[in-house]
Amino acid sequence: MYASSFAKLAPFFKESDPAFASELMGTAKFLKESKKESAGKKAKEPLMENLLAIDHTIEPMSVDKMDWSSESFEGFGAIMRDGFGTAQESFLSYKAGRARGHYHNDENSYHFYSGGTPISLDYNCSYTPRGDHAALHNTVTFGKRAMIEHNGRKEKVKAQEEITS
Image (cartoon, rainbow, N blue to C red):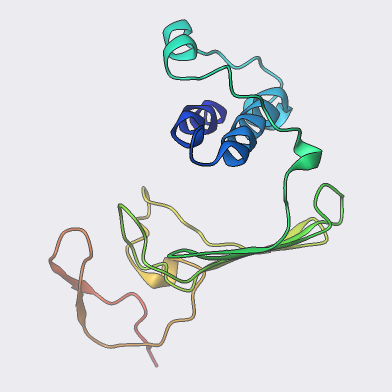
């Protein structure tokens, strides 16, 4: 599952940022132990992956010692939180920066939960329907009657943000 991804990243920061490596291991442990990841089922980890890819000498940071406050991230945007770990938690993530490794029209998209309730979410799907147009992301768009260049295929497609009367 995705929990082990955090543990696999930890060794890369073991020397340069031991606190962050510990936080990655703590996040992996938290996700693995929570029912959120596997809906109550025990997560299966391949033995070789567990032995070779995960450095078990890195002490997992306790979740209550992690910094869950608001933060901005260079090249991504910002994450703002209030009331972490409570039923009334509020959360806003805002993407404002170039994606690393892939790109689709999700600049200025956001996710917003208030009082533990999802209020406004980015659709964020790369399968069906494709999220190739800003209209499928939680962004502010302005209509355009034109053909635009598809980010992945480099071919002309009809603008989905088109204003019709």
